[in-house]
Image (cartoon, rainbow, N blue to C red; front, side, top):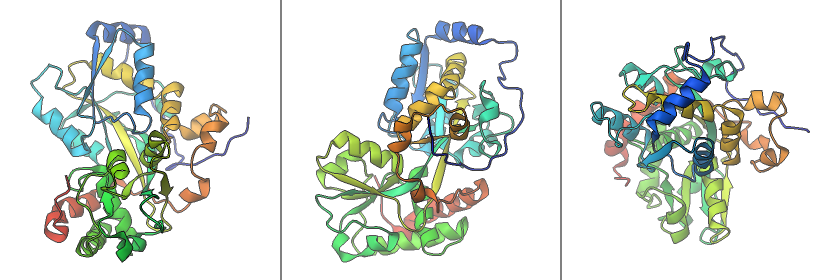
Length: 366
């Protein structure tokens, strides 16, 4: 079988002890998780990264564990707030696990909101995509793209400046609130990079200036864009992760037809990370969930959802990736200009965007 190799982040692999469960074997973890009988997730829309099938796969493998899906449309900041708000709550409203943007992982650790755990495949996760102590670890990545309803948009935008054209009046939306959503915060960064801003505070400020101009032109729609709003015509163009756009395209089945465009400039790749809540009511089920996600089966489940899993290089080296999954992704050339912002760059950008959106852009996205 032939495969096209795509390289992610760095290639340095940290040496570790594998599972941090210590004397706890997988059989013991399995039994303890089954005794808990429940796993509470949060912010996992079924169309996001193939999570619908991933969750179904986990349920099929562990039928004794029910999955309680909290607030599927929450943003990364909402996830952290859910942990803070439920520290003393052992009921079903307390999330066991998180899936948040890269910059939110260290924040959660610093606040004491996570607990360390290293999955069995820990050594195959790139060293620059995980916390050395196991508090958070990269899971997948995508690039920001334009998702376009071609029934309503005659000239499909190919780059950021195209979004400012008068023909796109009342057409352009973000796929989240830029004051809380990692996807939207990095979309502002991407626009800022395209306008010449330096990654970090500079990209945030330049991105805010771009969206200020977009809003002043009457092109920005302060509605959180998703498949439904695109199909209804409320947001004919949505700036979203490529994997979300591709999943929306599939779900709509051509009604309306969607085109997913990776812009010519300002291509930002966003890594998301997994973590276990420090206050998880079901810590063993949370650990078992992580083991499933970082197994070959779980990683390929994300790839089926058009996300590049964090263990992509390891899977490719083993010849474990079916060619049809590679063929379903956009051409590798679309990713050649992708920028992987560092944690410091993301933190600077995030501070600029969340702190300045209201005063600079003034559009209440909801």
